[in-house]
Length: 202
Image 1 (tube, rainbow, N blue to C red):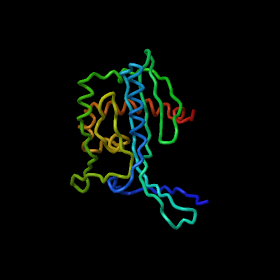
Image 2 (image 1 turned 180 degrees about the horizontal axis):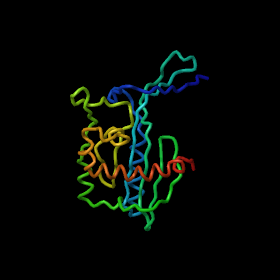
Image 3 (image 1 turned 30 degrees about the vertical axis):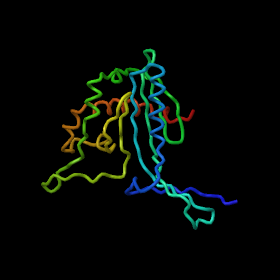
Image 4 (image 1 turned 45 degrees about the vertical axis):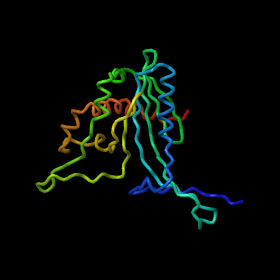
């Protein structure tokens, strides 16, 4: 029997156009939108964090590569309001985890104008003063974040632009005025308070 082994190697740079792409996030977003539409739920959003890794399928002798492709090792948090109750569910590329009821989800009731603005907002990069000069930090290998709504999605941006960046960032004040900034911080407050429960498998 010619058994195969899958090797996952994290990439420092990726050329998506040159390789086969396995992206379960596309299916998740599509299925979530369909499910919410069937239930007539409009107050929902999906916060995603994408990170691509390289998968190499080789034969059992480890001497021949049979396939080389990219996998989106995403994480997603689905927030929604149903029958006056608020819920959040964590999903990644391998599992669907437990959903959790939480309080205070007024942030999900976004009108069309607010969503339209969020879809256009551009998160500015991290810049600091170094030796008297403005320097942009090189983007690390990190998850890239996107918000998905019933119709449309925000621009993708490195998660570290919002996560754990202090006021030393020269673009902190401008970013903090964005609606997407406030939405991110509100979502993460619920995530951080309940992360151990959310990550328990069903």
